Amino acid sequence: MLHQKDGRQEMNKVIVKDFKLQVATAVRLLENIDLLDMNGHVSFRVPGTDQFYINSRRASRASVTVEDIVMCDLDGNLLEADSEPPSEYHIHTEIFKRRSDVFSVIHNHPHYQTVLGIADIPMQPVFGIGSFVDKVPVYEKSSLVNTVEMGAELAELLGGEVTVQIRHHGTVVVGDSVKAAFAKSVFLEENAKKQYDAMLIRPDIRVLDGENLVRTRETNWQPSIIEKIWTYYQEKAMKENALAGLL
Image (cartoon, rainbow, N blue to C red; front, side, top):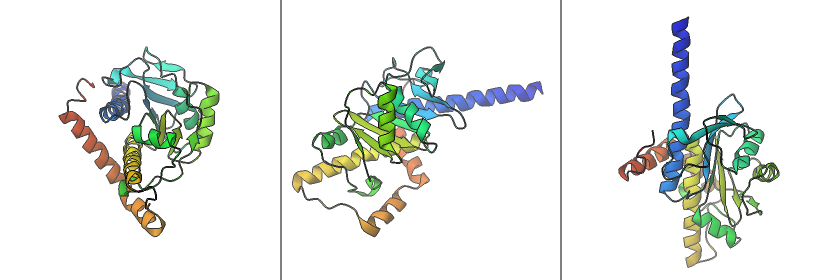
């Protein structure tokens, strides 16, 4: 019995380390492609619990390590590690409380999505792997989302969608895994970039619609595609030495 208990404890340690590693890796990858800067955060809710992991407030996004990932409950109370969560943890907690299908939340600061928001231009599906873009609600309070009330407002506005934009500020993206939320974050921005560039040529752009849009979405967002996106950006970051010291 003692050996079985020790085995379970070791297995739990491995699982926890993997959770933290995915969060820390996602932060590094997003910073490496300029979707995060000195701010921004990635979270992962532990399945079957009211606990989640998130990068700590103090850790640099450019050099975050596994040790910089903290665990909190859905009230933002620190349960593990000796740092503190980001001041905008309410974004994560309020979404987790409302969305049982969401296991990862990313708040980033993408350039092109923010520019479109400033210009009051709705995002539209304009290319293959960005075709999941649909309704993108806009939260009009541009300051830090650092209160329960603001987090609740934002989560209610998000509803059942994939993303919500914070005008003049950034974007919040959700997924059923860290890898899925990461992939959506990458291609929300790539879709916004292509939309922006096309509108420089001709404001009245053509967007994906009808059966073509439905099939494009279905063929571009299989689980294997998400894994492929994650692997590509991870290997790219490794070649650029952007994951050094992660562990």
